[in-house]
Amino acid sequence: MTNRDRILESMASSIEALDDDELARRTGISPRQTVNTMCRAMEGQGVLRRIRGVDGKIVNHLLRERLTSEPTTSEPMGQTARDDAERGTPLASVPADAAVGDSKEQRLAEGRMLAALGARLGVVLTPRRLVHPSGARVEIDGTDDDLTVLVECWAHQGPAKVAQKSKLVVDATKLNWIAKSLDPRPDRLILCVSDAAAVAHLTGVSWQRQAIRELGVEIEIVDLDPSVVSALNAAQKRQYR
Figure 1: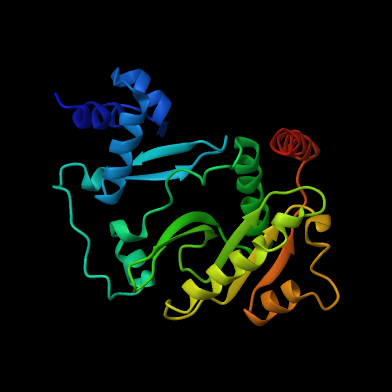
Figure 2: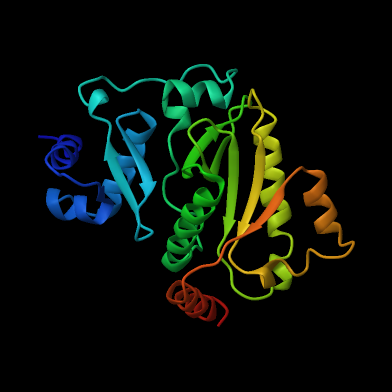
């Protein structure tokens, strides 16, 4: 039995999604990075999906209808991301591991932020990877099934540091850029933050505020539970040491 078979067998026999650590433990595959690499490859083949779980860790969901299929190749890149998403092709799979530098506290908080914002908007928001017609892949923190809303989250407490003040402009640029490739264009592009103080620099006539506004991107602030805020603050203190 190959390592790929061991991973698929473990996932098929489990009633819940498994993260890479648990898959490595169940299959006996070592090092753990081998499991991560293989799962990422199978995600690209449309065999499984990797999404952020409730604890912030990436978990693997087996697509049972594709389990017995041969690995697929990607279609030509000239198609829109929305078409890929509707067909469920590998190009529209949900994102893999979180960006380097994100703490588990931040990832957990962003999951809570998406849930709260989704409830406010009346939609379910989940992470997804979209593909631009150019072939560039873009990971979006949250969108609904119909891609009517695109969201980027920033789980940060307190005022932005100097090096962070342009982050939201970069996120807004990404939202605006990928939205232009979708037909129809999403109704709303949103930057979701967890603390009003984190966007205090976007006041008055700052160039960042004007840039975000002209890109057609809104800012939404959601409140987090005190326990999540406390964990975020502790994580930020570790990062700034």
